Amino acid sequence: MAEQLIFIILSIILFVIIFFKMIKKNDTSYVPILAIEALGITIDFLVLSSNRKMNIVVKFLIYLMSVALPFILILLEKNNKNIMIKLKMAIIDMYMAFGNYKKAKEMLLGFLEQDNDNYDLHKRLALIYEKEGGIRKAIDEYVQCIDLDNQDYDSYYKVSILLQEMDRKKEAIEMLNSLLDKKPEYTEATILLGDLLIEEKLYKDAAMVYMEALKYDPISYDLNYNLGMVYTMLNDFNNAKLCYEKAAELNSLAYNAKYCLAEIALIYKDLEKAEMYFTQALNEEELSADCYFELAKINIMKGNKELAIKYANLAVDLNSKKIAQKIEKEPLFMTIRNKISIPFNLEEKEDMPSFSKKERIAKKHLENTTDITTNMGYIGGSKKKIFEKDKENESEKQREE
Image (cartoon, rainbow, N blue to C red; front, top):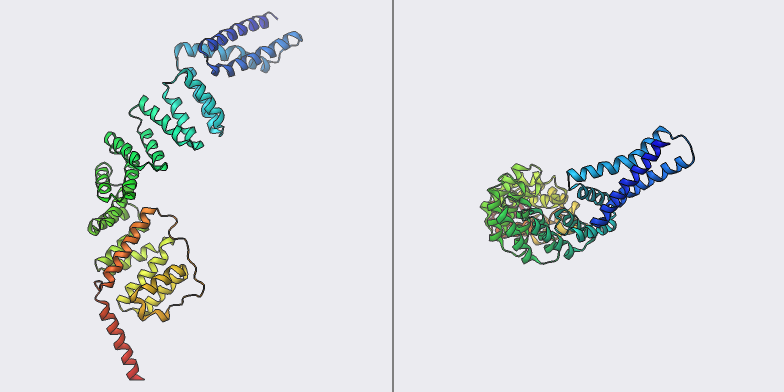
């Protein structure tokens, strides 16, 4: 009985100490501790009033809830003033982990009224606003984080992304330039800046940004591949080829880089290399129809009409509408058009859903350039020779008949 009375008095004293800490600091994060302690005191009081012997497990839990926990908290606070901040963060993180952003935001706003210069609180609030779609508020919070820690490069990057989403591209470009001045090796920031410059058709500026970043990360697939696309848009196919080759070397599954290498090989009249790269790029489902179409063209140029017909029909099977339109526009197919099985109901598959807008633009630019050089008769001998050879074969057949 005496032990229980001493325990109740001690636990009440500890409860009062923590309660006045909460009042003094106006900090509601003490509430869960007080609630646990109050529950322990209540259970002990009920057991004492009923004159029952306390189970050892129950006694341990009551001591833990009413004395040990608050006593440890007081000691920790004395030795480490940040313990309550860590406790706050733990509670907020728990709410966020369970998707209860409303409650987490309420706590954050309450804590920020007491401690507005707390970087961690602003960072978490920015994340919540971003999750909720409050882009402007998220930007404000990330800017607060940068003000509190000017080496918070991730917040610079986040602000840039959010500005891009708001279509404030010039501000995003300025923010990214500022970030890269401070941390030039930040590859993700370089790629985002490059994307924005490409959207604005500032290809030379984008090339300079990528080349600067490659000084810090020369074996980056993304940087080499993106620089290849920029050189493509600048019609600098020699440098584009070098970049695509490096990208393909760094990532053997980079089939789009191999497709681009195949198109460049066609521009430079290297049919064998073009055929090799198109064959490798067939492994990418979204590219296979185009690859078969290009392989058909190459085999027409090489005089392999039967193989050209086979490839053309495979391309039509994969994407009938798109390939039929290409075949109709391409003069090279004039000699084999009647051998290609084009269905009555043309179907078109979605074009390269896994590739980005800039990849599609670069690919289209290469294809158009290749078509121009082909139609000018620069690839694998002039088409005039191809048509003359076909006419000779046709005349030969007529004489035999």
